[in-house]
Image (cartoon, rainbow, N blue to C red; front, side, top):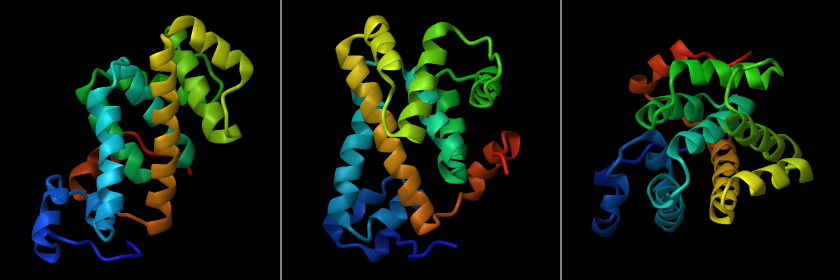
Amino acid sequence: MARLSYLDKDDLKEEDKELLARGINLHRILVHSPGAARAFGALGGYIRHGTTMDARLRELAILQVGWLAKSPYEWSHHVKIGKDFGVTDDDIYALIAESNGEDSGLPGLDRLVLRAAREITNDGAASAESFAALNDQMSKEHVVDLTVTISFYNAVVRFLATLEIDVEDSYQPYLDAFPLPE
């Protein structure tokens, strides 16, 4: 159960109601601070709709963060969102294999993006080797966008965990299909 109440549009000032255009639990908690909700939405919106980075790679990076953080909310939402952007069930199984240090069969750039996401999440920064490899295989814009994406979602999973935000019933099937490790 969440540590703060879930707000609805009726709980908000008229000028803040648009913040709940997507009435997901994350947003229903964020709107306790409309300014934070707007800032969060601006960066999240850029990551989802503004970057020219490959959407499938972006979603794999986000999924890697959710998997490592064991974040039911993040994981379930981005399993669904990832599928909307080309992530397959085989990709998800391969991500889990990569996370366990097993051969995934993924292409080299996919493995590199996942490795960078693991390093940033676990170690606080990508290694010099990973960064150099990303810089060789991606534009500088995409390297920055990937780093922003991984860093932002590391903040998101900590926000979700601290406020104990619940997975909505409509996202539970994605968590059931791909359960997080114990």
